[in-house]
Amino acid sequence: MNCASYDWKAYALGELGQEDRRHAEAHAAVCAICREELATLRLTIETLSKLPDEEMPRRIAFVSDKVFEPRWWQVFLRPSFAAACVIAAAILAHAFVRPAAAIDSAALQTQVDSAVTKAVAQVEKRHYEETQQLLAAYDLLSKQFARMYAINTGMVRQ
Amino acid sequence: MIFREVEDRDLIAKARRGDVEAYNLLVSRWEKRVFNYLLRLVSNREDALDLSQDVFLKAYQNLPKLDDVERFPAWLFRIGHNEAFSLLRRRRPEGDLAQEPRTSQPGARLLPIELSLAVESALRRLGEDQREAVLLKVYQGFKFDEMAEILGCPVSTVKSRLYTALHLLKTTLAPMVSREES
Image (cartoon, rainbow over all chains, first blue to last red; front, side):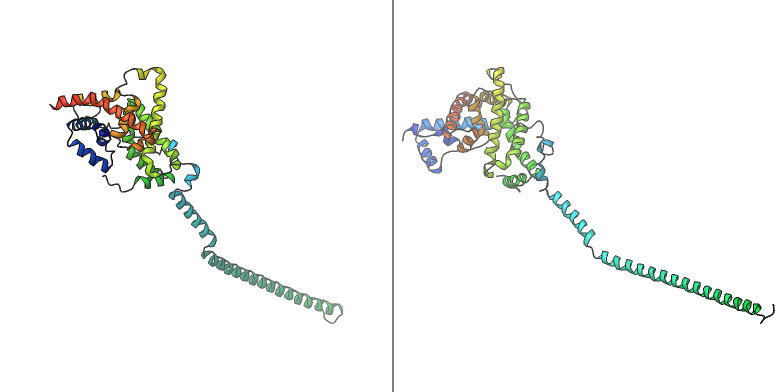
């Protein structure tokens, strides 16, 4: 192979495969012209690569900006949103199916029953008292009637 | 090799699901490289910064369309290439490209200032396509096939642009460096 068949630029840029590199190096070892060409290329690339990167004057505006906001449906995929949904669901479920609700209903029923019993007793007592008053009034009127009847018939003097 | 606790592909997968913090981290990993690539392409810091912003916005919006997450770097720089050349085409009617490109404001320099200026000057003297080929290969370390993907052209075209650029840079820079070293 002659000198023109070696791709020294690809060699210097690290683009040759292992086999091609080995052949090129074997040739350079015996060819001063190719060695000089390779040395000049390496020096050029080395000089270029020493140019330092510049620092950024300011950071790129990050995704907290509006333009980076996720699409509306992506909001539903956020872990924080999912966690909020779970908590809300738990609160609702607790409100509807909690065992304490049954206990409260029984207690309330007991209170209602007690109140009803008490009210019935009060009504019955009042009825009893009214009945006793009526009986007493009836008894009194009966006695008065008997007395008046006796007077009228002359059996009893006034 | 720099160890990364979370790989880019994991961040991309999370960002696709709407995890903005994952995308934030991805941006912080790549913004400096993208910025410097664009800066050396358009030779203006503010333009490079605006373009970088656009690149990451478009990348975020089009992330679901990225077929192979392993190709993310080439895909990201492809967006950068399109954005940069869109700007360069808009500049062209104003005659900006016919003039000497604006120099970037110098930041911290590791090399003597004269040598850095010489390298920047040599890069600016290249054609846009040739300069971009050098930027992608020498400064960003892309392989020929990745460069072809970024530039949207065959590998043979990539090699042609890069080799021409290297030939020109060699004739410009090598004597200068040799003189300094001697």
